[in-house]
Image 1 (cartoon, rainbow, N blue to C red):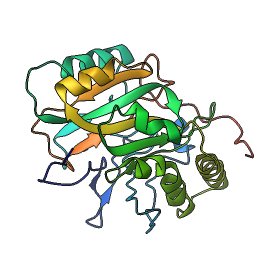
Image 2 (cartoon, rainbow, N blue to C red):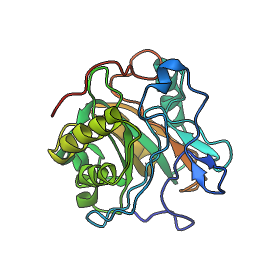
Image 3 (cartoon, one colour):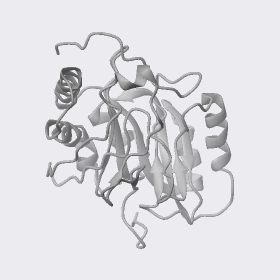
Image 4 (tube, one colour):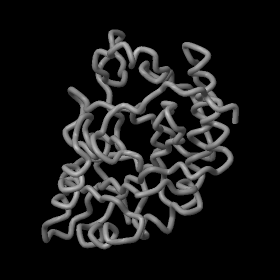
Amino acid sequence: MPDDPRSSEPAPDTVPDDRGGAAPAAAEPDPEQRRSPWRIPLILGAAVVLAVVVVVLGIVNPRPSTGITTDRLGPAQGERVDDYLDESRNSLSGNDTDPHWALLSFTDYLTPQQIPAASGGLRISGVIQHVPIDRVQTPVITVATPAGDEPAVKSADAAAGLLAAQRYRDQRGADIARVTEARLRAGCACTAGLVVRGTLPQLRDLAAQPGVRAVQALPADAVAGRFAVAPLLPEATDVVAPTPDDAPVPTE
């Protein structure tokens, strides 16, 4: 399906920083959050991995933009999961046949090889990667992908390449990045969601497929590059909130 000719891929949640650039928006952290290595912006490095353009859309707890975005896919921090699921179902109502940007969330993490079939044949424009480790706060990385199945399948390698290019403020952050990168390169079941584009009938069919937890669509006039994306992780069951970060980091 051809992309919206008006613009390119979804944009990250950002706000202007004091140097005139853009940095992830974040609330004032509490003492627990200050210990997390993912409460600071990732320093993006140049990385070309299998011709896939990598964009970090958020950290573990992405925030809505205060200025550059007009729409949002995914739940907000503090939102009840059941409320978000209701919102997602309601977003698929309507009779228009225009293509819509949508967030596809899964009941369980997928392996890279499962991604093409899980999309229902729709154009994939973003793959959300997250390595789940109990009580260790790992980063959420969204890889923006060109058309075709191969870039989506290779998105885990692209996310791993981005992590390898970063600098981290402490040893825990470096250790988390190391184990996250290793598991992504090993082909772990770490895909939490997809950003896709399809008509409302196509998206309703997709929402009825086994293993699909939610499909949330934006209005048809939403412009690519002008909306934020935040994941609904499979482990979120009650309220969308920061994950604990108090366990030892695994060695592999």
